[in-house]
Image 1: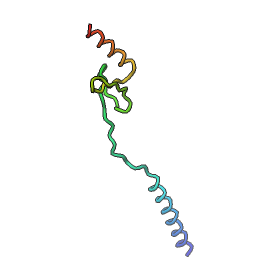
Image 2: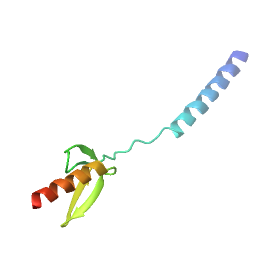
Image 3: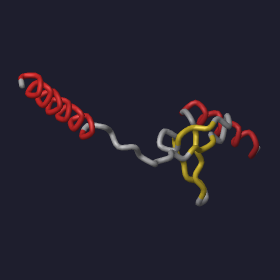
Image 4: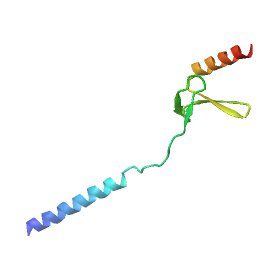
Length: 80
């Protein structure tokens, strides 16, 4: 008789633990981050982390401020 009561208690505790784990399982997201290419060094970076500059209805992406400066210097050299 005591074995049956302990078994039922064990099942109840197990059910509580499993239900809590199911509630706190993070949901999987089907979100895929868009990769963009740095205009200067051609490295691919996530669009959310890229430095964006707009020129003539075009978006230009940079991976860092350094690449942005180098790109501007190259453009100035080409215009001369």
